[in-house]
Length: 256
Ligand code: MG
Ligand code: MG
Image 1 (cartoon, helix red, strand yellow):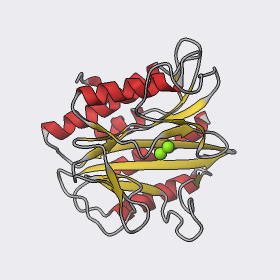
Image 2 (tube, rainbow, N blue to C red; image 1 turned 180 degrees about the vertical axis):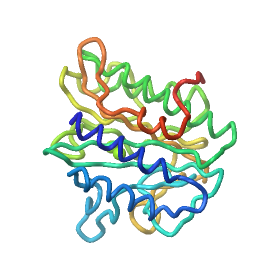
Image 3 (tube, rainbow, N blue to C red; image 1 turned 90 degrees about the horizontal axis):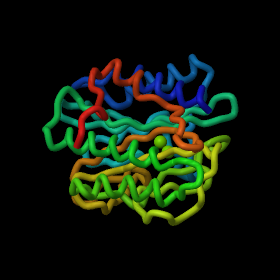
Image 4 (cartoon, protein in one colour; image 1 turned 45 degrees about the vertical axis):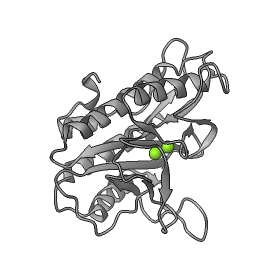
């Protein structure tokens, strides 16, 4: 799983090198697809979902008010866009699943604050992912950080167990109460992934059956790490370092 998670992050870095105004999201998808196959992985998302409407691409690319599950296509990125990219890879029998929201050249201070708070909430959640705690401790930590900053915590989509399948039990909601839910045990592997809106938390799904957008049109951020529950401190299998070597923004190093 560590190898799969690291390959996802290196794939993100390859995509990050190409993010600029004018590039289409389909081109970003092609870069990821080639890199994954060159490294003996298989994209986890392509073909995932219902038989009559499987997800069509390697990456989920969701721009601005799109929260998750956006289709790569002919859209050309513009300066000021924020782009949430989610990538899943299957290798040696295990999945890695990592998301990161990128800035195209620049964004407003308000949007940057949304991104930073979302990353910080991700680490707040991971700090609670220790043996003996409950799922609700992770959920509550994420929700508190984001709502205290005035943001909406998307409820319709949640984090999850991860391993031989892309989505395993238990669900890891980004909202909830301390001390509730399943007890965490050392060795459990989870994908923790806050999806946070600058406005209200309600979302809609577009007619393509996949693309999730904020109902009020406000921008949204999505960051995801793969972790192992341990005694005392969770182990993070993924790493944003590869990405941030390229973007030159260490987005979690600023306090909200
Ligand atoms: Mg994901
Ligand atoms: Mg996930």
